[in-house]
Length: 556
Ligand code: BGC
Image (cartoon, rainbow, N blue to C red; front, side):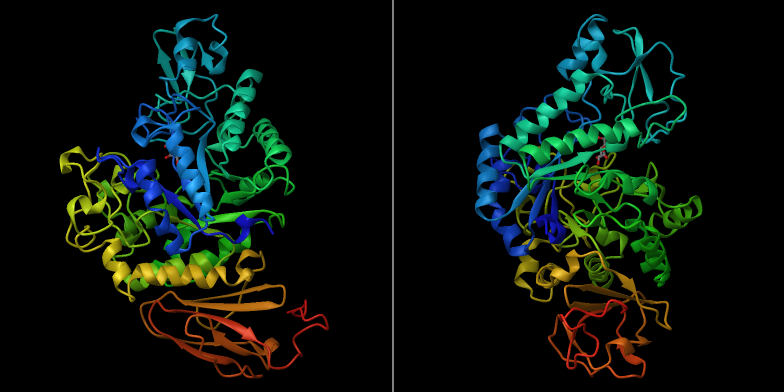
């Protein structure tokens, strides 16, 4: 089984994490000093947001040099030292790969716009009119009015799916295809464990389509995978494709010719819906609508990340409902999403936050945590764009939350300092010292999940119960069966499950180690406290639900 199939990932915004040189910006030195932290938490793989030179108009997703490290973060040597230290601890590291576009400050774009005959002109997508590809939607709706921008120097329009300062690369140009393969090889040669590949649906444009998920795009992504298979086995490609289930599935190809992993965008908002509605249906329905994926592949599941909580993969009605429930103030909304962190979204309610993680960890896929959400950090909706979700990590209640020794006004963004979620109250040091904290609960969840390989498998059955507020999921793999029960409501719930197919087995609570009553022929009754969860491993006391080879009967 590939390492990524049952790994826990952790998203790091380097600028926000730890400032090693006291200039107010996080960097590789600071991050290297924090490696023990990840081990203590129990995560397996870090995902680094873009670390390349950039004018930083989109926090590094506007790359101006694919082969370097942003000076704020250190040098290439600092990066190498960080990677070696991470590997020495058994931690893997993947990084963002921004394929679709560059910064308008990239020398390729500067050369392209300056000279129609430059070999770089054709690195980008130019047009004399802004009327082509009209069916492509605009992603940054709050800022952009068109996917075309006029460039007075070039005397033409250029194509951009994101901000106007991020011109799209022209993947119809074989030179661009080759350039990006070189970029990939450069970082993998340095030992990087793979990439989170940014914005993959948009590589090609074709008239008469919405310019997403095109066959040409898949063909190029398969070229990338060939390179990885041939030269870098054991490294991974994780797709950022914010798409509906039927469009997502093709990114896994036949299991070994496109992506190893893809973010599970459709599931994420439905976890929030299920919690607010105290109803398992939103989760059950989307999971049942997801096509199966090849055995070697895996979903990457998440609750929040560095972007707004995207509401692209819900219906218009669901979006309006989510905005009403979770973004009552206009300032909380951004594009088609919600710019809030996990803890404020869930009312700072420790039980709901922990339950959201339990759901994430119980469902198929490898979970990824967003830095700061493990302690329930707050946000600042008054900062620009998505900056409110990217504030300094809250390490302790000291100067600058322990993030930096620089004067407060030199910090790249102010620390969160409100009464409820601010660093004086919410910080790593305090939670580490308190065995009852969210941080410790999450650490336990990670440990329990990792000790049960069954969670890395794909088998997932929702068990019917007479109570819609309960999400009961069965995970089975290699002779192991776990029932994970979650109470989505704020009231104690009685539930009664037909577990007769496991008659004779005895459930053991994976957290308390308590052995529960043996399962009999009658419905199995349990009570779950408000927002509580229980994960039960079925331990056999008789063999009658097992095949002769010790595996559970296939019809179960
Ligand atoms: C990233 C965003 C970024 C965009 C453009 C996204 O999918 O997650 O943060 O702004 O790509 O690169």
